[in-house]
Each structure stands twice: as C-alpha cells, then as structure tokens.
Length: 92
Length: 394
Image 1: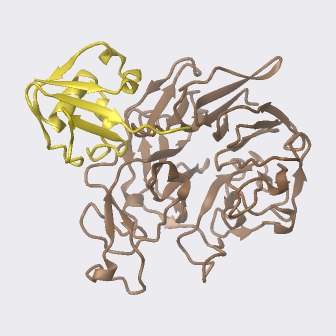
Image 2 (image 1 turned 45 degrees about the vertical axis):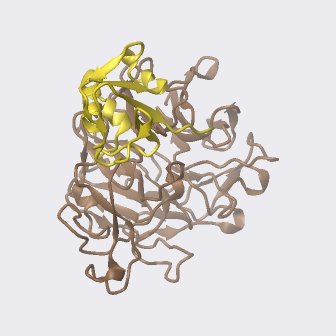
Image 3 (image 1 turned 60 degrees about the horizontal axis):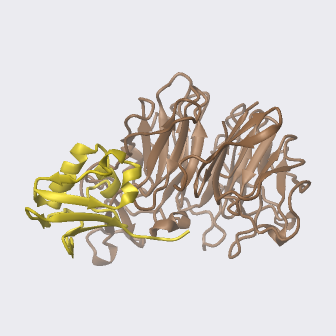
C-alpha cells in the first residue's frame, strides 16, 4: 500500500480527507490518484487537467523524488512509500 | 427592476442586495478564490460563479437558494483527443506537408471559464459556457453535464478537425493576454448572445478571431465581422483575427448589436451582417473593454472609455461613462458622482451591466459605482473590494 499526503489547501474541497491517513494500493501514480478519486469523487479534476496530465502548478513526489512523467503519470509508487501532492505558492 | 448585483472578484463572489436602506453587500462568498464571472439565470433564479482556481483548474459553482449555499458542478472538460494549434504562423500558400507550415499542437484543457449564458425560455436546461482556449460548451440539463460544440472547435478557420488528424487549413484564431494569470496565450470566448427570437441563432465573440454566428443551433458557424477594423494591421478589414472585447445585444430589438472593440466602438443594426465604427476619439470614446445595451432601445448603449493601448486606465485620471441614444452618431459623457482626480481604474469586459434605468460597473481597483438614472449620475457602492472582473444584475 502507498500513503498519500497532500497540501492542506485540498482539504477545503475534500474535507473528509482531513485528519485521516489515506492509503491506497501501490502502483503507477495515475492509479494512485484514481484510487484517491474513488475515496473523494472529483479529486482528480483538481490535480489533473482535461487530458489527464498533472496540472501546471501542481507537483507530485514519490518519497523524496519528484515524478518525471507529468503527462501519463507512469512513475511507480512502491509498497510502503508515500506520494506527496503539493502546489506552487504564489502571491496576491 | 433587478434587486441584486453579482460581482466576480479576485477574492470571491460579492452580492449586493437592494434593501430599504439602499444597496448592501453580503459577506464575500467563495472567499479567496478568483471568480472571473458571476451571474443569475433569469429563468429559474439559479446563481452561477466561474471559479478561476490558479492551481486546481476552473470550476463552476451553482446556488439554487439565492446564494446561501453553493455547490460545485461537474468540471467542464475537453474530450479526449481535443487539440488546438498553439503556435503557427499562417502562410499565403498553406501546405501542411511543408516544414515551414507545420503547426504546433497542444492538448486542450480548460484554462478559464470566461462567460456563462442561458438558453431561451423554451430551453429550460440549456446553458452555454465560453472558455479559454476557445471552446463553447453546452449543457441541456441545467449544468450537470457539458459537451463541447465540435463544429465551432473544428472550424476551418482553426485548422479543421484535429480529432481526425493533422490540420487541413490555417488557423486565424489568435490568443488573448486575458489568460495571462496562467502564462498561456490562447483564444477565448468571452461573449455569447442568444437571439431571443430564435434560440438556434447564437453569436459568440472570440479574442482574437471575431464575431461568429450560427443559425442552426450550432451545427455550422460563419464569421460575422464585416465592417470591423483592426487599425494595427496592413489590411484592417481582414476577415479573421479581430479582437472584440465584448459583444452584446438589445433584447427588445435583437438586430441591434454593440461591441467595444480593441479598435473602437462598433454597432450593427442588421444582425451583425455589417458593423460600423461609431467611436468618437476626440471625445475619448474609443478604446475600452465593456459595453452595455439598453433592453428596449437598440440605439442606446453605454461604455466606460479608457486610454489605449500602453496605459489601459482611466483617461486623464478621471472616470466617466458615455452614452449614445442614436446608434453612435453622438455621445454624451457623464461624470457626476465619479472620481475626476487621481483615478486610474480600468473596467474589464464583463465589468459593466444595465438593468432598466440602472447601470453598475466595477473596476480592477476595487471600486463599484451605480447609476439609477440611465448613467447620468453615479453613487459609489464600495471602494475597497478586490479587483473586479464581472458585474451582472441578478
């Protein structure tokens, strides 16, 4: 299983994810995100664009490494690993 | 007479209600989220807000209880395989096989839901949404689901049907810096006008392509920019590539259409078959973004002029509203109640609206002004709002 941790900004739109440990089956991050979407319908619309690529100002890391394949999200999240979802910060 | 004004602002939706004591704002809604357009469906009272999340993609929010509670509707999405030509310089002898003629394609994703419009009374579930990068989405179930209008997306002036393969024609659609927040430069549909006589007759306006019209419910689209001029081109009257900032229609006389264009104020009294420039540059009435048409009199319209092109703010530090009642032959300027010193506001394309004798506009400086006498005198409704993107009477 893989743990998914995310920026607290997403809790505004998916409040039931707050204060819980999100664990889903390990595998390509595309399937990891789909599994989160099963728990929180609409979740992938926030982090992926219309064609399923990672949104421009969103980043994913598997443990300490940023994912490389932002288009098809084929990077593998290993069993026992953690996927981090975070956002660019901007002002004003 | 409307008793509600909806503002789309950089920090959320602000609703003003008319009460005995005057117009009063409610606490901001969608707080902290940019709202590029907010409006009310006159058919059923549903409120709509287009959320312009910087990180999470555009979303539509809907309220069916007058704004007390809001719910997100299913995201508009371009269908799988939707592409558009992102970079391509047209050549006189287009040849998709030639290296110099090879377009650069981009997968389509919604950057901004720029405008929301409603179908006719006999189409209760019909809504339209115009996006950057230039797609018209249609819903027939009150916004629960949306579908891209493919004939417009696949129009020959955009390169043809890119779902089917390579471009078969040139694109004449340019980008708009209005999407600058995201660092993209794509076309945008900012105006959608449904003919009240015939719901199959719809105009859209695109920055930068021009005015485009369907008379068969969106199955085919033709350009309707004849008479529009781009002063900055060698041939100002070229058919495609125009930058109408906003197009609107007189509902009571639907053949009368108005547009505030990058290169002047334009007017048509024949259903957009012909446009003519009705600017008065010597009076400062030429450049701007918004325009409002009277509901009954097709010859009456209002603009909030600004100085083009490198400044884009109020002329000489003073805000004014100009009105014509004779189809643009003459204009009157009204300043009573508006700041005339040290005012540097700009009013964006959706930032002015009319309802009966009332007009309201809001600026990116966070100022809101209201007139209840057809634009002749003004009162300030607020000075400290976030930058205002849209103003619509509810």
